[in-house]
Length: 336
Ligand code: CP
Image (tube, rainbow, N blue to C red; front, top):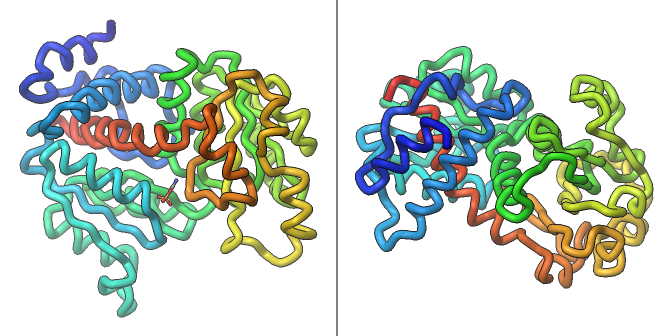
């Protein structure tokens, strides 16, 4: 057992102890491209402890008492925002929820001014979603608070990838040499990009599959930076999901589609929807995952979404524990 985990387990009835900085080096969580396997495992181990806390009658520990967590969302969200807020409350942090459409952003305030204002109000951790790729990196350069990227443009969504990895580990034990098929709108998917980094770091083989127009021109260059041989591109759905351990269709991001990327929605459904027939090509007990929100009847059939192999609700549920672990870790990384 890891020393950090051992320490946590001995004091869990009270609160979580200060973190051993030997195992964790991140002041911010911007993506998983700079995470080692050991660091991902630390998140998983601590998420297990958080999961136990969430099963108690009183789902609260005083770990972040006196700390302020601000959620700052420039794009819509249900799961990520709600689970970060629940996670912060379960750790007894003070929480502020900033909706960009109802803040001074609507009056023209810049991102930087908003960040500095929030920092001046005492934010220790800022959980941020932004429509522009790279926005959390700019934030991280200008504020002392820890920045957690809750999704930036098409670029990254690290907490989603970590909860996906956590969910797979719960079912399959290990990701090493597991075949994970990510299907559909890869081009617009920040979830796919963060999952590629995280899953390959954990030893999985990731197959990306979709119509050629949704496998973006830069995808091959992106893959060239990943571990050799662990990420492949496939346009035939059957080849991608044959013997897969995990099948993850992605939401067809209609709001981000430029005209002409899809010949027709009907053809997309016919060729790429994960339904019972297509799922039968994967391993018999393959997990069906979806980061949400789903377009049921488009990238996934209702039967598969609610079927016995689906762990989609469990992903949402695990999101709270994983986000508690991240809040705890970035707070600990500041010497807490
Ligand atoms: N998976 C995800 O990011 O969902 P939300 O947009 O609801 O946060």
